[in-house]
Length: 383
Image 1 (cartoon, rainbow, N blue to C red):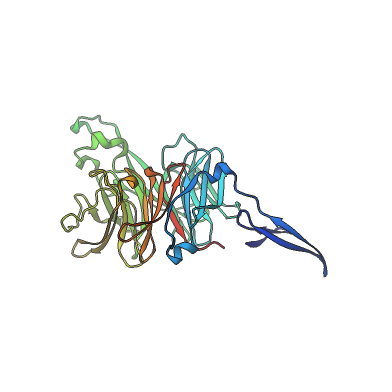
Image 2: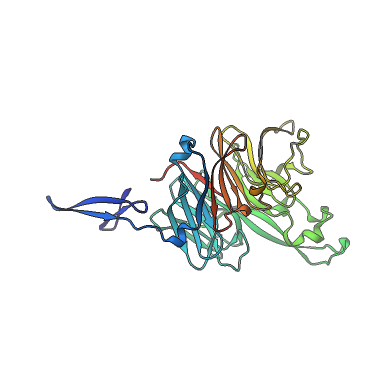
């Protein structure tokens, strides 16, 4: 429960179905005590998240925390759920979907939104709202430095600049490969905007890789590599995940140079059986491990991998592998994040499930959703 001031009014914010007493004071004169109660969440919203499995005892940090998930189709909705699997907060927009949502350090929710005309995780607006539902930041494609379609990722860096992925289109002569002299190849890029929406820095995959070197470019030109995630490494450089190539790239955040590739046909060696096939939600953990959700289309089984990277020696060592059960297979999308040292929050998007797993893969907690969530983020606490 929190009291905030808006203009000359004081507003009390509370979770759903909470009863409380309030005394009205005029000047120094106390008034009567009145009982109030917050409204119950509508049943149609409650049914979007349903508890499925739950152990009697859950990790302490998880039991006190929350999870954020978002709905990409109409109506667009974001939900915060507690450890009981109940929705404690939600926000709706009628004419657009939340393509991806991120809980910020300022306890706001930063998102990419777009109408159904934009596919899957692609969008044309950046929207940041407070937990009170107020708009903190809103920028549309075509305004300031926001000049391209964005997708899959949006977050603030340490300079409070917006970081997102862009859709990049460039014309190439593919006639020598059986195409035309004016074929359009669709790739990906990185865009950095300041807090006013002005462009600070941009990068394109075409800056570092020539599509003509790819023998499958005619087949893949409409969506060449399919970037699906971006994060900042401990040294400040970018980690960029590509679904179709099965690789993670490290990009120099200043020069834009490609530092290395991890994955199929990349620069790192793996122990036998230690390779991932596709990746989502790639990020460096507090223990300096690279954590990712593997879709696993080659074996029709998804999993979670954690690696320690010997970057100078170009070796990847496996710290953790969890093979998810068949009912949690997700051909696309998905995420995995540590909650504490012994448990992870895992989103199996196409299984419409968000689960808490221990390091052996045991399901400690799981909810089912009435939609396909792109990812799930853990939130320690709410203000």
